[in-house]
Amino acid sequence: MNDVNIPGVVEIKTATISKKMVWAGRIISGIMTLFMLLDGVMKLIKPEPVVKGTMQVGFPESTIVGIGIVLLIGTVLYLIPRTAVLGAILLTGYLGGAIASQVRVSAVRFNIVFPFIFGMLVWLGLFLRDWRVRDLIPLRS
Image (cartoon, rainbow, N blue to C red):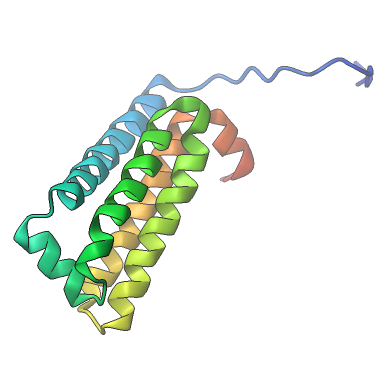
């Protein structure tokens, strides 16, 4: 059969998606979301360990609430299917900032690797649950 391009006609992609893959993505995304929501809310509440930890990496206490708001916005966008990619991009930026902050103060390796792993899990969860992301990042065997 010949492929014919007809102006004004959009090809709709129908791919079979494994339910196990989608559920794995939802579970990974859910775990990441819960962690990010907890982290964001803790920044709004500002308990002593959060204030101390933030100041140890060089940020003044006055920035904690703003950082928490940015994190919560990115997380909420990540939860909404239509804006999930934008949310993942914002969370990646947030986590990149966390990595940079830890590197700047010569933190232990775990503090540097932890946000990197979280960033990878944010994208893995989205990759598994959204065919559009799989089309953007075509991993082939």
